[in-house]
Image (cartoon, rainbow, N blue to C red; front, top):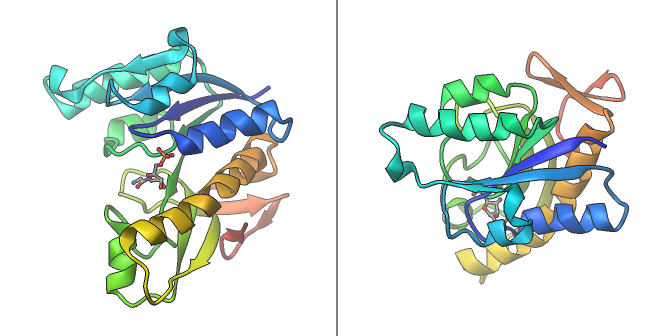
Length: 208
Ligand code: GAR
């Protein structure tokens, strides 16, 4: 089965949904490693110790040095896909290019709206009536790669960033599982920034 490496900085609920999907037979894949920039990340506890790698960027002389160590650890487990699932540190161009075409991210907004941080507060602030999450290929420019699929939720009048985040998170899990399945089965491919489903170019992201 396809080998998946997961990068995560925090709670790891998106990682858990991949683990559960594999256990339930909804995704034929193997999680070969979990990699973190935060040695205390709860995501790490979801896999056995030999599959964990976590280092603090503070222990490295530069972003490039950290990215190289991370990249060497990722490469050592020979992944077919590298999934950023709540990985909160910007990946340098060197890392992105090293794993180009195999590196995807889940981002909590309807890209290209609200790249970067604090997406839920910004959606409320902007008066958006719809918000959601996107799974996209990673390119060196932040949150700018081709979008594979999105899931939408309404923004309600009394939403706080927390209530909106919870509604988005609930759709992130099935979105990520379905997107990784499309990649792992080879149904979705990317070339020159264009996404194809079953060989047909998509002109807008899939709605999952
Ligand atoms: C998720 O909402 C994910 O979309 C977001 O962090 C959360 C991680 O939750 N990612 C980003 O903001 C990336 N810039 P999890 O640790 O429970 O999967």
